[in-house]
Image: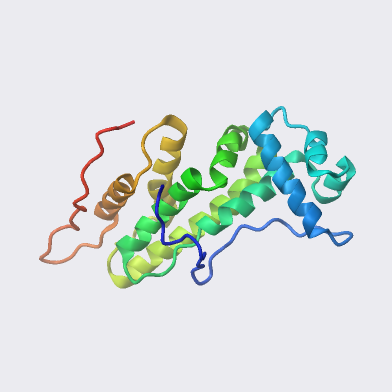
Length: 231
C-alpha cells in the first residue's frame, strides 16, 4: 500500500481546482437515489466493462427506473465522467509544505495512491481505452480531472520557483507529464508502483528543473535503492 500525506483527512491546498460535474437543472435530486446510481454504475462497470454496459442493468442494480437515470445523466459517458471526477477529486490537491521536493513527491504519490489503493483505480482501468478513443468521455475528463491536476502541479512548480529551488523557465505544462506520466505508463504496461519509484521520478525532475546555484553542486538524488524489477 502506498502511504500518502494526502490521505484522510483530505487536505486541500489553497485555490485547488477540484473537478466537479456540471450543475443540472430540473427537479431537486434525491441524494440517496443519486448515490445508489453511482454505486450501481461502478459495480456494473467492473462486471461488464464500459462497451457492454447497459443503463437498464445499472437501473436494476440501483433499484430505480431507467428514466430516473436519464433525468440526471444524458448518457453512460456522462455518468462515467461524474464518477471519475468524484473518485479523482480527493487525490489532486498538494498541500503546501514549504519544501519543493516534498511537494513534487506528493504530486507523484497522489495519483499513484489513487490508482493502487482506492476505488478510482479499477474505474480508471476500465475506462482508459474509452478516454483515449471516445471524445464524449475523453474530452470532459481532460477538461476537468486532467486540467485540475495540471493546475495543481503548476502551483507546485510556481512555489518552487518562488523559493529559488526551481529554474524560472521551468515548463509547468510539461511538469505534469514528467511527474504523473510515469505512473500511468506503469499502470498500463506494467512495473511496480512504489515509493522508491516515486522518489526516482522526483529526483530526475529535480535534476532537470533545479535552479542553478552558484558554487554548489546539482541537487543530490535520494539514497533509496534502485528497484530490481523494471518494466
